Length: 301
Image (cartoon, rainbow, N blue to C red; front, top):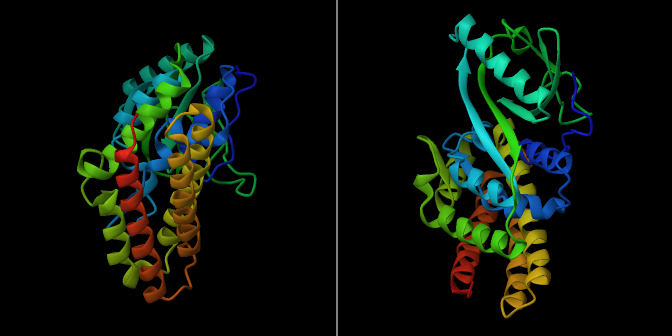
């Protein structure tokens, strides 16, 4: 059994690849930048104190789910499963996933990466692989009941996605900007222990550079969050055109700041860059981010 026309987009931010695939499956015609921005993800930045590459996957998603619903997608979190999950729990989960898929409802999983679950065959879930350049990771199937493809590295979350009525784009824009401000001003509401969001993300990153700036975690965090900030810049430029009001000029200006931040983060992804140079870039990006939030707060939304 497979859902036709359900495909994951090859973004570095695999959560956004899942969301784009689900939105397109349901017939929504949002641009890539609008998907990143209206969902609020373009404004997120989460960094572990040791630059762990898990940072893009470990944060409180409640606000993100709320914004997704405004876009026309209601998310149901089916919960977390690890190696200790019982056979009965796995069987129940597999049944729930199959029932949803049989109804034409897309599903996804998160285990190291976010993947669309687009069907099943026998005792295997069929899962999307985000990137053609990585044919062996993440796996393209998940076998119940042993989850053998995960090689014991099991920390799974599963989700289903139901179509609901979206609100106007103007309301999406307003709510996403308010979310961006809240992420920055109330970061601990969204972060887990050991991780930092908003200004705390920059503090963690800068403090970790000396010891961890040449690691895979540095590269992956900067790559993912750089992609998001670049999309934030594109999104606010698109918003300025959609709104066409007194906020349009200011949004276009703020857009340029986010683009600059995105380019800084992409540059900081270089493992070989000296720690002192990387710190200087990150301090500049942090300053720009604070200025951006001040500008967003001053807007009349």
